[in-house]
Length: 162
Figure 1 (tube, rainbow, N blue to C red):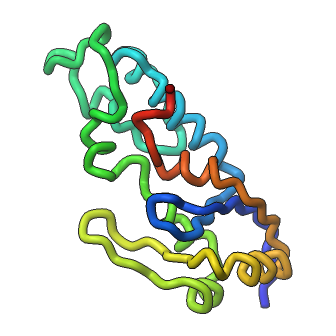
Figure 2 (spheres, one colour; figure 1 turned 180 degrees about the vertical axis):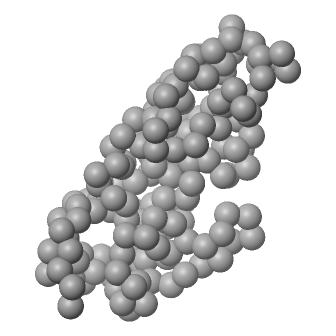
């Protein structure tokens, strides 16, 4: 058994009704990027949001001012194509494929294939205690934050600013 020294954050992913795991080292910064974009009031403000961890679904290479998305035009994240289509932010449930050890994925979860967004890991909520205990026994630091997990998933993006 390999010992890891990684900090994971996890929580109940409302959209998939399962547990989701993410790297705690970047999760808060990624959530801040999502919140910053959701808080933009105009397309100009949206284009100014700096993305270092996530792609920019409202960036200049996606929406040109001359195509009707001028800097002073009202911006609503819930109307951005990648958000509407479910591509942005990426499903939080996909992250477990990268951060959980393969043997634990095999034992506690199942891979689910989606038509449009690829594969994600369905980690049943009833396996929480055992899985978290195993991770901690391997040296992982594990903390639960449902709000952060759902923010990373873009759950209720249209209402983030209300």
